[in-house]
Image: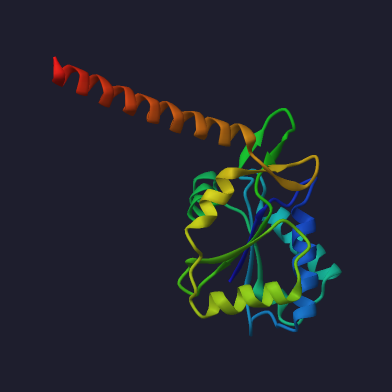
Length: 198
């Protein structure tokens, strides 16, 4: 299964993610229903099934593909359900009131038939071979490595550039915490030894 998390009224990259994915799927020669199923899930609990239906109709019009009408599923849901799915696949988003939009990672999730994350394609501009590999690995039950949460922690999505950038402040905070713990541990051991000599 291919899972695309975003929202249907997104003013930025959500429609670009779907468009790039559909182009790559078409070029890969895979057929919806035969080779893959697709779920586009809105992370915006205010979006309705009518919004999902309209987005699906527009995407089907722009990117016709055999089997797509029956095997591309555009869904919405209650906030708690959406958060549970997003959390389960490591997709952490937040609503920015100043921007009046969701800030979220950009990419595609490939899941095994058992619903376990197999791999990710981050960013946009997917290559057909990468999409085919993601589908093939998911179908065979290959599971994602544990390194991705670390990578997602170290990088933030920059809405202005449309790219992931190194999260310098997060890394500095992590380095500071490690330094404080190391110095604190060394001082504790030094005082303990000194106290033992007295």
